[in-house]
Length: 446
Image (cartoon, rainbow, N blue to C red; front, side):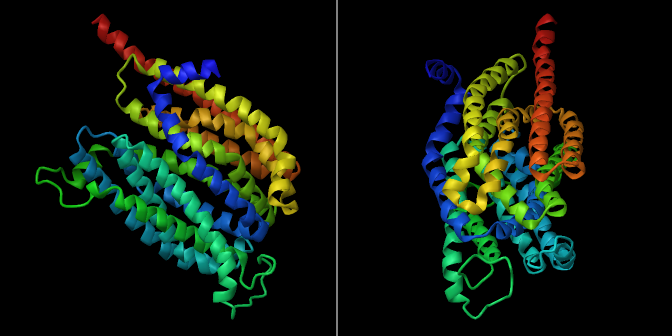
């Protein structure tokens, strides 16, 4: 603990991370507590339907802004950054409308392919989910640009809490409000008169809407007319064309890899198994999301202003602190998860407990790799990350799809493979950092 305190005192990056984490710990704890009644009221199959819906919309949300959202961090002046933000917002609106239309057209195909008739009626609202999720992320980047870490932390916590609260309220209120609805559907929570997935999907949309409304109120400086000297969106699109052309595909590949896993599980196993995996991933990823999200926001802001010669020490010091935090924490978590998860959430989630333990190597490696991945953006070497991302996606999904082993053994194999791939990414990133820092040596020698 003494060593950890010394590391945090000596690193401004880690101090900012600690500020973000400490400000949202209580809210995240309550959000996890909400999972107890949610997982006891909703069935694994209901969560499986939600996971398929969330995976489809998640892939689209990741690239809805064409990565112009991340570009908000790069301009030197706020006026230019506002134009970039408007460009990202226009892209999101177009993609969201297209998503809704595509969901209405292709909903039946997805429903038949995954043997989930519910998707036919709910994929058309996927456009709304895409808009709310992507627009909220865009405004978070604006806050990050101004180092407004507290509003970012509050917004993330409010989103998690609001989704859980609305999902809980709906499972309790929908049977009364919609008492006339009595579908013969196996995806029903015990004792309710409406399908369980209904409350999960609608509650998710309401929660996203609540978080979006809050962050709009806290980013009023984005509203109002731009100054006459502001550049045009077309100029910004051309100036930062590498973001959609190189970083955009990289983000898409990463989103396909992450969200493709539940979609493949639904094919090789059952919708119930998707629900077990979905909740296990949430439980394993919950502490990591808190740390990882804070790290990425703060670390990216610092990297954006780091000069050649200073990046290596910054990256090394941050990784040392994160390793000291994540490795022992997740090692302990892996040991207790198989009995702790069903004890807290109910006997229906025994499989989720073992899946949670299996995912911990991957999650722990992700805490180290997530912030460092922004190195490729700052050094404008996104093509290296794209090449790695394509290989990572192919390897990860192939291990899952072609595994000859049982489902649980396959999950362990998937986690180990992903952890190894993230370690390889760290090596590549470190080589990029060293090459970037050598610019300072070259400049001094001249």
